[in-house]
Each structure stands twice: as C-alpha cells, then as structure tokens.
Length: 528
View 1 (cartoon, one colour):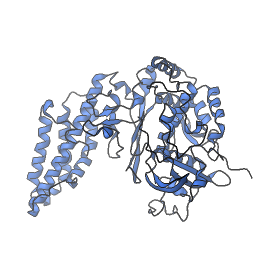
View 2 (cartoon, helix red, strand yellow):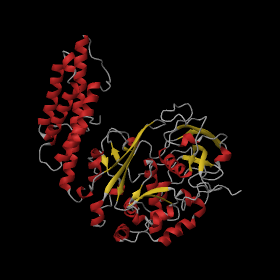
View 3 (cartoon, one colour):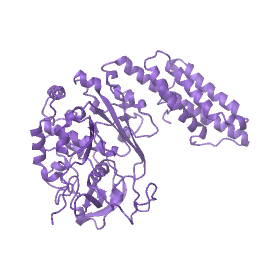
View 4 (cartoon, helix red, strand yellow):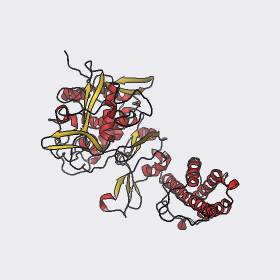
C-alpha cells in the first residue's frame, strides 16, 4: 500500500485571492504567480500571519536577499529593482529552491514531515488528539461551547490542508503549560513554553500584489559576521530536530522568521492522506527560548522596568482600536517614545513611489493569556497610511501622534472620574466609607469607555486635518459618553448628580488646560 503523502509545494492547500476570486494553490504556484495574486486568503488569521513569515524566508532565498555580506545600500537597491519589475519571482529559482528540499515539504513524509518531528511517534507514549490542535474545538475536560460534535470521545477528522493551517498557528501561537509527555534520552517532561507570537499583535506591510507584500516583508541584515551557511529554516536543516541539544542561535533571516518555535508536532493521517485523524503535540526544547526581535511587532519601552523587562512586544488587545496604533507605525522610534516601530517598516522609504502610495498594513492580533486561555483573534487593514509617515509628512505624522495621545489621556481621565463618581455615589447611598486599596474598574467607567472610544475614533479622523485643540474635542466626547452611560442613574440615585458634576468638571479642566500642563497618556495610565 502506498504510504500517505501530501506535498504542500504542489497540492492546492493555500487559499489565495486573485482578481477573479479565491483559488487554492501549492507553494510553488503561489510564489511563481505571486505577482498575479492579490493576497493570501487563509480563513485562519493566525496561520496567515505565520505563513507570511515562512514565505518571506523563502522569498529571501529565491531572490538572493539573504546574503549577509551585501552592503545595505546594495540590498536596498536590489529590492527596489525587484519591486519595479512586473515579472515576479524567477520561476526557475522558485522550482530550484523546492527541488532542493522536495522531500521536506511533504506533510506526511516518513522521515522529515514538514515542520514536524517524526521521532514523536516513539518518544511520546500517548497521542494528544486532533481536537487539541484545532483552535475552536474543545479538548480534554473543556466544555463544547460551539459544536457538541467535537468531543474527545468523538473526534472528527480534519482535512489535510486545514491541518496545515492549524499546525502553523500551533508553532507560532501555541500554549504553555501541560502537554503530552515526551521522553528524549534521559530527559522526560510534560511541560512546554509559550509560542514566540503568543499574546502579540503583528503588523504586516501589504502591497498591491503578494509579490510586493513579500518583498516589503524583507528586512536587511544588521548584524556582524554571520556565516551564510549557518542560517537554516527547519525544513532546510540537514538533520531532524534534536530536543536535547540547546537550540542554535537566532540567525537572519531563516531562524529569525521560522526557527523560533518551542513546540513539536506530528500529524497522523488517514490511509488516503486526505485527512488528519490524530496528532502528537508536545515540547521541542526545554532550554529557555532565545530572545529575538520579530520584525513585525511593535516593542514598547518602559525605562522604569528592570532591564530584562524593559522592552516587550505590544500585547494584543481586542478592545483596542487599530487607529490607536498608527503613531507607532508612522513615527520613527526614539528614546522618548514608548513604542518602537516594527523593524520591517524602517526600510520602506527606499521603495518605488507607486508601491509606497499603495502600501497598507494588515494587522493580526491574538488576545490570549501567556499560558492556555484564548480570548479572541482579530484582524484589521489600514488605509494607505504610509505617505503620512514621518519621513514623508512629518507634520501629519506628528498630528496623528498628538491626537492619539490626547484621546488616550482623556480616556484615562474619564475612567478615573467615572470610578470616583461611582464610589462617591455608592458610599454616600450606603453611608459607608469607600473601599481602600486597589479598585477594579466600575460599571460606570466600563460603560462610559465603551461609549467614548467609537466617538473618539470619529473625532480622530476629523482632527488629523483640523487645527482645533485635540484635548478639548476629546474632552467633549468624553463628557457626552459619560452623560449617556449614566443618565439612568440620575433618576434613581439621589447622590449621583453632584458626583457626576465633579467628574464632568475634571474632564473639562483637562480639555481646557494649556498643552504644557496636561498629563501625558503614560502618566495617567490611559490604557483602559
């Protein structure tokens, strides 16, 4: 009997969007036709964010832009010429790359299955279950919230191409904590670390075609003395992964983009190779994860934090609107700013004007905790904002930053004022002193902020081309939101009126204060 096989370089496993609709293609066709493809169309955003990174590493190999000996100016000029070309990637180079590693792109290869470890079949005494791999399915003792047919007692097979998507998401966003026990040599453990993108929000430059998008994802080498032969992607390594040895250092671009996973997996197919029925999911290393700067993340800087926690990727927050991130993308980083622009955006000023004018940013965040709990993932697509970048339009970029900062400041004051008004009202009504210590956000503050942020977004888009003082405009929106969210309380809580009047006065004072006396968003903890 022919063993199961699913070569992802030729099987149509990746949905892409063309001018005439959505099509499924293998990786070879995807790269050969990249200049005729608008974008990836994966329905699982986590897999799309992960695949951008894998494809970017392949793009670097195919174009020769993975050469660490290229001077920066030469690297930028080569990429610029590629962006000016309408011919796309060289088909011969694409096929040569896949031919070199042809046996490594089989999802069910007997010795080197793609992005998997065949030794798990021997080293893990128990399988993990296919439900553990698939986001949205319950596993173990978890409740079946969405579909009662997905239980550990009745696991449904997963089409092979969908298993590929979830495998990608597992390597980048996988959980920490308990996992299937794995014994490798004298090392035995059932614990794993969090995936390298867990809890983060990624910012991906998007061009007019997938060809442009992948070239815009590339970043030049900024290190010193890297051996060109030392950098490998997992499918390029001459030998399979070794879970006992310390992972190799992070090199550019292969290991930086594709080689930071601390998870190991092995998919179990059905005899036809069209479906996956089970999986081994466990740890890939027990060594501490190596630090690296992902080129598609914003890094927040906290000078007051200890050195090891001073610089951290910005967390994904489903409640945070996309426009609140624009200043971090458009302004070049400096020591005074809390956010550091993603590295992929630092070399986008040496690109053709037509590409720059059409550049948008696709955003993918996964709001989750650092271990196992997942809240929700979200995506967004910005307008063509790159012409507002500091390097192109410093006045517009500064105005966007000032408006965002004003919106954050008033949100912080709104939360504080609403919380205080609630405490004053309740304490007087109950003739009891207010609680001391750390206070949770009140219902009034939650409702007021929920009403404020949509109004603030409308005001933001008006203000970026308007000379009105931003603090005053956002103060007016905050007052309106507070009034709307607490109007019912005025009818049945006699002490609410004076307390809310004091809150409104606090908001007015911030809106009317001179700019040099207003607190900054960081000083007022503006993140609700």
